[in-house]
Length: 143
Image (cartoon, rainbow, N blue to C red):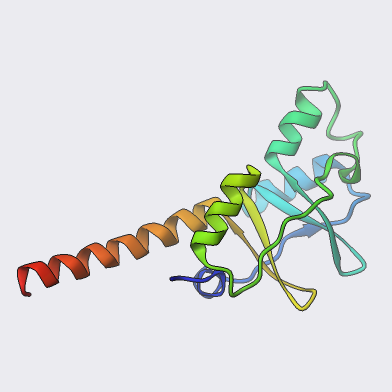
């Protein structure tokens, strides 16, 4: 079974973060510039939240607020669900499905190692299944 660590080795360990006192507009600009769907909210080197496009849609747009007048700390998700580098892809999929989340920070010994998305997890599962199908096909056909 593939692990989060293997995903990070392929994807990379870039961490995009913003401070809680930044405006939501600044966070959205960062997400657009980096082509990501969520950004970690960090203060003094510690993860204190996560802000996603979903947070923006539900807490700014639907409530008629302005992203230029609202601070990240006001709409971020403070209860961050994270995984360890040794967590399996299947465990991540189950967690993301159960908690209805699309991004998981990867933390080892209180150090942020990276962030994986639902897309990363689905890609890893497809790769594993393709490998298994190819292997079984070779076995069955004797090639």
